[in-house]
Image 1 (cartoon, rainbow, N blue to C red):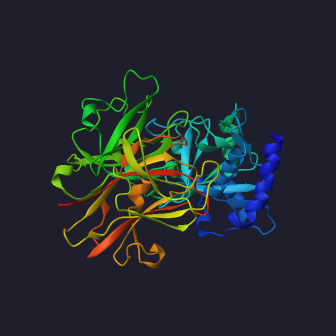
Image 2 (image 1 turned 135 degrees about the vertical axis):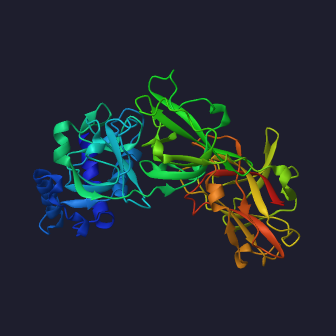
Image 3 (image 1 turned 30 degrees about the vertical axis):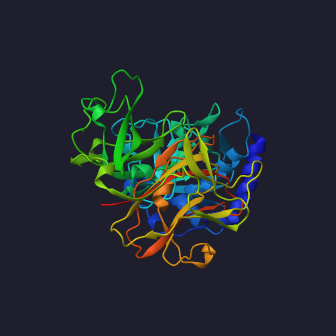
Length: 479
């Protein structure tokens, strides 16, 4: 562990010059006496020290604090190592509480995010204290003195702050430590939930309070309660939202100690749900945890997915005949899209991996000419298999152009990107090879007029990305 601490100190020195906000002066630091004299004085002293030019106390953002641990984690190998680091430098982190244990759905922990509205990062705090909502209520502005604390994974593999070690995980702040390390200001903000569809939620949102609209429980759960009486601990219930011709899903998890555990699920209606994004035990899956049942507002009629029979298919390509008139043109590198088949599935594959290394690759897959004026309200649906993903960004982009000349250099034409959210919302393969196809939601193509082209570009970002993408089919629909 000493080596890890030395490495941490080196990382702090490197990051401090660009990533840490130091010696900040902020009007929010004003703390009235209503907190109690002792608590008030402790926080005022801490903030005065932060504002002092003679002090070495530095404020670090939640995002940069998490980055310190992530850098340590990425440097480890195998399984036998501690999943935490000890902070030895004089640091302070600020956040706003996003969770509440008032209903018993959270236990000896709370979560905080870096802003009351439009947050960019969240983190956990583990403490040996129940009913912490009486002190660290939702929206409360919190400061944590990090010197000699621990940052790393809790049992759900969520990066959290704690006061000691617990095996190879972060351990709780003891009751005696809480008053020495965790400070609340008088400021309680309204936490405005971050608006996300179920399919948009990802690991970057862990610890944040988010809201999803047009959500419902499956009809198969009619007659069920939030908690399953046969479960000893947590119950998982599926949420669904209509997207395109199917459903996107997410998991709602409820503790057996939650006061609403035996409350019937509102299966007759759909609507809006607001909750904290966390991970299931062991960190395998993302889940919602409710603060309170008032955050479930199901007052709308249930949704139904779109029916393909309600649309006319005005263009369809499944690549069963190879490229079938589509052009492949590279603007960088020599590795290209190519037609292939496996297990009866035909597709066009793009990959920035040459069998041993990531390579530079910008390859265009360009459709035959399409008449956008022959119908109105065009919507495109893609079938894509995330055959393999590395840790890079999404390499697949979709475009249309109405001034491209067939066979010419595509970089000389005007291209409009479409479908960014729909493509990025598709499930990410966890690093193993497969051919599971997922269908995007509707990608709007109603804007272009006249004759034009559709293009799919694989961009390896100068060999930073080596993911494999299989494009299985392209459909353009119109009503």
